[in-house]
Picture 1 (tube, rainbow, N blue to C red):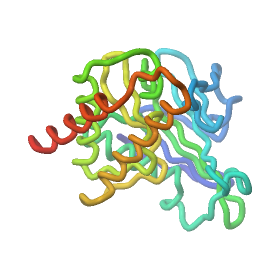
Picture 2 (cartoon, helix red, strand yellow):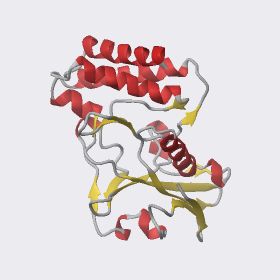
Picture 3 (cartoon, one colour):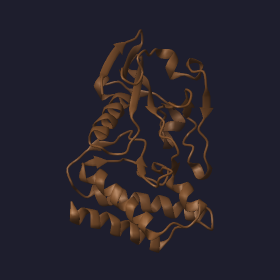
Picture 4 (cartoon, one colour):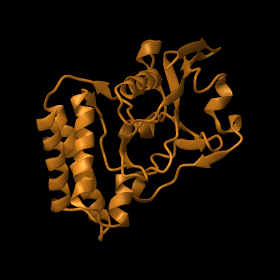
Length: 243
């Protein structure tokens, strides 16, 4: 992976020349691409409306604009305090993804990230390579029952992230994704970081469990319950014992 930083009139762009040879501010908006597709999704999987698929097959990208969630997002939608280029959300996530890809973990490959300064504040965007054929775990439990082996593999895959020290700040049923070969991928590492083993590992599992149960409560007929969760935990702990 070739990391290049180019300064712009209002900030900077970090990108991988092996993926995108030339980049400009235009690529961080819909007008900079020949094809643009809004990311939709049932059960809340479309995010906050801040994500687009851009570019043409065979290589498409995911363009995401950083937005705040919760109460702060209602007051200040997309501005963050600037404390240095390397500490911006976009640059941190780009480099986090690059590290995880180097570990052999299934994450989107980072292509480019941009920050634009506004006095003491900044806005940010990130572009990653689109993973073909993936759908969120929320869609999997809506589409039909899966065998316990599938859920055990979900657990084992999560352990591989934890074993590498990867803390995901928002592990939920939308950020855990499944491709058409039933391989598990992880998306959205805003605020993610590398940490030594600790209580956070159980806490992220608990967060995923709450997310799955919340979806089941919102819509009857989901194919998830105690059997599936126990299989996930068994896969996780079996992987930890054999590590």
